[in-house]
Image (tube, rainbow, N blue to C red; front, top):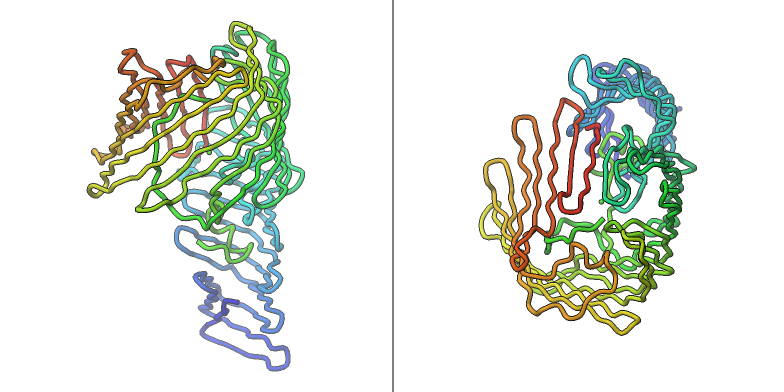
Length: 500
């Protein structure tokens, strides 16, 4: 256990009660955490501390003001009255913070990321539960007050999470407006719901403005362990009918999480300080998983999932995904192997059925040429064997260069096919937007005059046409942004507001 150090201008020690009473210029230090107040009572035996006077806490980019704090360092529970906290750009106020060993609960919370005296928005919540060890929070009975709307927006439950593989970060404060070739123009809205720390999801609602009909259904995540979860989806999607998914994901091998360079970034166009105790972990950012998944097993069934404008059913599917794994001399390996029995409903409403055994292997290395300049080389082998006897095999080498240019870090690509694609997939959704020829590409994000502009494109040198082109523009304000993004080749666009 980390020692607790109490200091002050006046220190009294009661030998009978084994308590230390400190007053005037009191500092309480535990590890890297430092709290200041004018009066404190610390019971050495029970590890219970009382701070009846206002206190301040500052650590890194976090500051907290509070009063009348009672906390037990042994049981990790307590109460703080009148909390005002700033964590990086997040400003939080609440009437009372209750702490126990698994979560924190704040009553009558006001939340904003705006720094102006009159914020562009504030979120008022009756009750918020923080689960720092898991990495998310749940807010109940919320209203969003904005400067650009004459009325508040009510959100019954809002869930925010940081786990890279989870869906709990998917509940939205604002509707998403977009369009694609299959669904036409739509408006969609996700409302979070919460059963417990390991069972959460969203109610998904929407309106297909152009094609007619409504979206309604749910997406649910049931965490069965720290490394596995069950993912469920069921939706009625306007005139397209029912779509669903039931899948189980689990890590096979993990390692302690460290930063590693990416080995390949030439994607195909297809549709993610210390935690000392619950008291201190709310004062830091939500944590990403401390372990990185090296390989992950996917098992499940899907019904009419939307992929590249087709409705795809897989009954069942099984796949093992190998994430970036170090080999020798800084080379890294990734890939996946899987099998599925699939049925595709094409945009022309024709049907294709077949089984597919898939194997993809990627080996790559990144060389540091100079500060902020890197060169990467990657070898990609993509192989498919179908139940009807067909095969589809592709082999590419990919090279990328990224460098510092003003305030941007652009990346340019050259992709070379090492052999002509052998065979062809029977499925249209697999062939659509797939790499089959030599390509050049670029990816860049440019901040400019209060805007964030992003561009990504890959150009087929043999067909002399763009395979994919993605454009994103974000209009930045003090604490929120308006984003518009489009894939001009696939005919998709979306529009939304994000609270920063």
